Amino acid sequence: MNTLSLDIGTEADSEKPTLLLYIDGNEFREILLDNSNAVFFYNLVESLNGTGEYLIFTCVCGVADCGGWDKVKVTHNDNKIIWVFSFNEKQHIFIFSLDIYKNEIYKMQERIDTKKTILQPQFATDPE
Figure 1 (cartoon, rainbow, N blue to C red):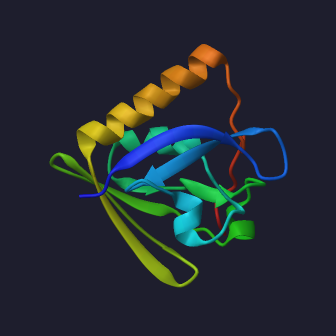
Figure 2 (cartoon, rainbow, N blue to C red):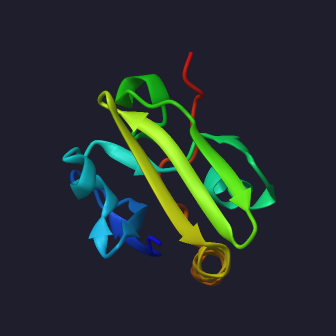
């Protein structure tokens, strides 16, 4: 099973806060070898609601097509969350513990609310 952790960092070319997503201890943008991507926290939170397709990743500008993103297929299966998506013609599959997934998202939501942080991007446009 994969591990998920979240933190707040800044965009490479500005001081605007962004969500940093780590899978198995590796920062997600480094896994993809592409720093022009961002995590859209609102849809990450929405992915807790059930199985479906969610635009969790996008370009830092918020336009999914700009970054080459499609939605992530999120499956709730017993006590697991499964992500399946493609990026740059490579398929990625990650399996997370539901409890850890929820805990990381809830902790980050509390941190954002407490510090009144506005994460970038503030919007995301679905791919066409």
